[in-house]
Length: 354
Image (cartoon, rainbow, N blue to C red; front, side, top):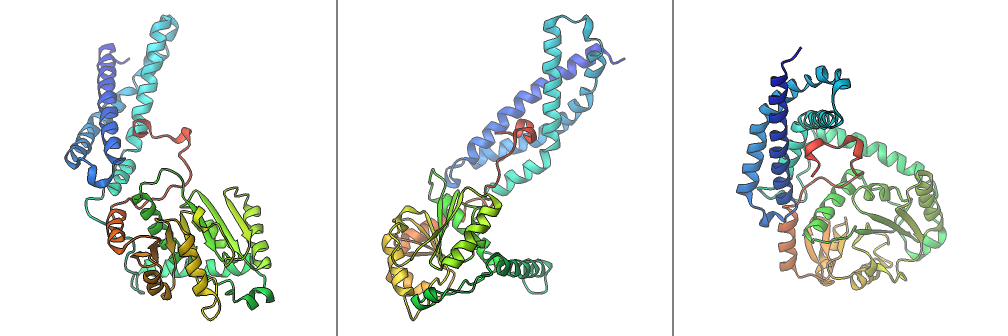
């Protein structure tokens, strides 16, 4: 039998740690939601240090929390108020146990999001002899093979006559790198709504599945009827309600200004209407719209069209290069983890929830 005094002392310490931990986590969360340049780094660092100092006490309380089982077996003689108090204590100990279980993972995640130094939007490609390079090559090759399965259609004669480029498979590692860079630029723009993304010349629509990992609403525009049907069948087969495919002519499309992010990977041949399409996109895009154009030609075209070059394949419509450089610096302070599925309540992280 465990001494009742020991149990009471452990419960008292548990409540104290619970309150201290909760307040420190709120302090950390309050600083993390601010823009990097507005954070109080001294306060943030001190709060994280205090959380680390609390961890040994947290472990000690958890080890002693099993004593509640001895009293739990004798609840028949307790008053209703005592039973309610006991239930709250048990819930508190369970919360502390879950908090300790998640301590290392959440603490590392927090540190990863604190940008004491800028991180470039694009990292250098890994050398060919590294395992990272080999893994990327293997994944890219499989994805490109699946791209052919997702869109078995041959380019339609009407699309070819108009000057549309056939469905070009782009390595997913390149595309995802662009998506993450664009997402960090989006965060730096301090927008308060989910970004609306359009792939101009989406082909079989496979890249829309990747874009959906980063942006709230994803749409594809495709002139070739066969390609558009194939793209929509992929989305229908996966029942993705936030992805839509439209069949239409990019040279006649009037709604580029409705989007926050526009992606185009040479949807037309240069000898035909690529220049006209680029001009139409830049003219309609609202100022601040993120343009993603992963082909060399657009670097010079961006200057002609009044777009700032942010980094590699990322541009901003209607922005001076000076303003673009400022935006890039802010984007390099943004975190590198995109949102995916929200955390389910049943796997919440105890006191880490904020």
